Length: 241
Image (cartoon, rainbow, N blue to C red):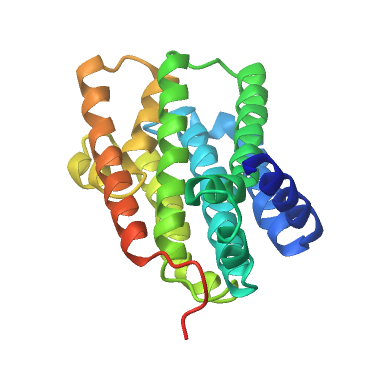
């Protein structure tokens, strides 16, 4: 059932130009700009890790988070969520099918842009840690999307409700990449996506202790748990009267 829903959603994304642009063109365009300007980042505190982390955050935010919130709000407004709930599919299966396309699209984009960057620059010092940071970032954006969808009345309203968590992580990635690791590290790590951004930088540049990286995972896990709790409280399956 999840596969059928996912296939239907993928067709909807392809047909919707505005969603398709936010899910593919903007993240890939931003990534291309960062890749072409990679040499300029070598003298920055985070080095090549800066464009890597920025690309990962941009793709996850614009391609996954914003698209997932807009999709869920649109399907609720058209009563599609309510109709799906009357079928044999469970709640988890329905939600998995609806968010699967933006997850897959974002994952493919990440693989492509990181693969290109690896061919034109030095590869990651710790590929396993890079994969872990990417998975944590995807999980975080999915949890935040479910929480935001709970307070989003319509796809048009999503333009407002997603704005803080769309601009915030991208701005945070810029702040982390452009400043020293000793500059307000606790504040950076505790903000949404701050820890995953630093993990991505550490994974690409290397020379970071295992204990430090493990500690950086904790804030992200905390945000995921908090977002899922909020989603459980606020998420609804039909328009509020």
